[in-house]
Amino acid sequence: MVIYRKRGGNMEVKFKQTGERITFYLYGELDEHYAKGVKEYIEHVLSSYPNRKKIVFNMSGMSFMDSTGVGMLLGRYKRLKKEGAEVFIEDPTVSVEKVLELSGIYEVIPKI
Image: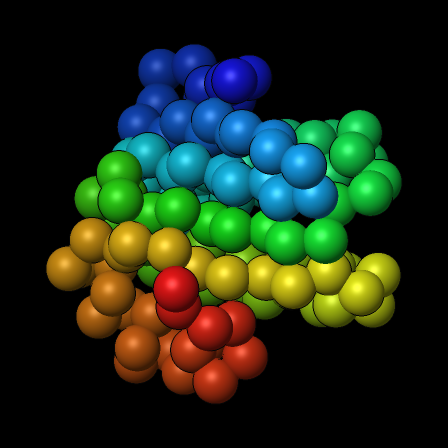
């Protein structure tokens, strides 16, 4: 598992690759302060595994997310859909679940 950490911050991303599946484990606060770094890290990982068919964003360790985080997820979804990959959200915390529901993201990215 490789880790992205924002120095002095409250955001961490780990990933696990199994076959054609990559699961990103997000911890902390995904907001305007961290979305760009998280996006760059995820893009780097995705480019390192061109044969991935299923991408899962596990949010069981998230304490906060705002619209910037939702936008980051939608951006990755659009890119991955063009490449034929499936994208899912997994196990969001209660507070993050509320943001995701209000955003309507589940109409685009299903929860598993």
